[in-house]
Figure 1: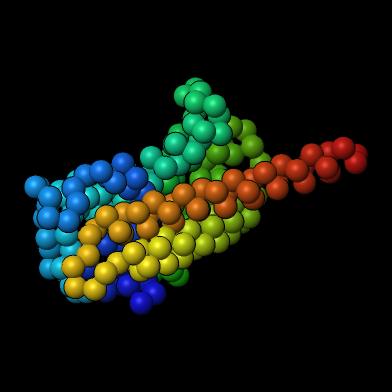
Figure 2: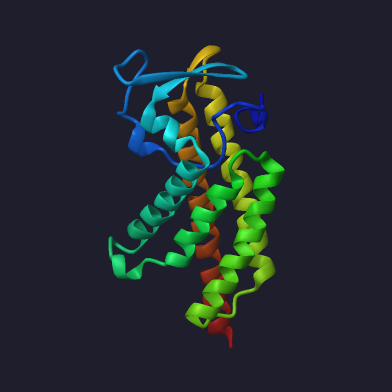
Length: 198
């Protein structure tokens, strides 16, 4: 069942996305609930949930999670938002849609290298492109698996809510951001320790 939502032809529940905003939008049998036939059975959900399960919805919610994590880290200061990172999350969510673990890892590497270079140019940094790409690829793959496991755990046979996929995508995207934060903090500690030894 691994990668089920992302590898089966015709299955609408794909990609890396965050859908916490849809948790209250329609439940099973609610007014405005839609059903779509997919390979694994019947998928149900509100129009908003189906919209968030599209390539564009995946991209928008991935960017929203990144932006939200940045706001938490910066104490809500909008002026501290790194829009390059938000844009990279948007692109990663868009390109990762429908891919399996390996594809999302490759997308993470490519987007991570591009993001690192854009941050180097804009902010005058000198971060290593290969390290940025590999870190992004690994954390993307880890987040993908977290989201995939959660999605498969919450899905029911025959009739399933697309909300399970959105919640799984939220778990995956959030865990990717948390993994990135841990690595970022670790790298800063190493840099500070190396600076104090000189």
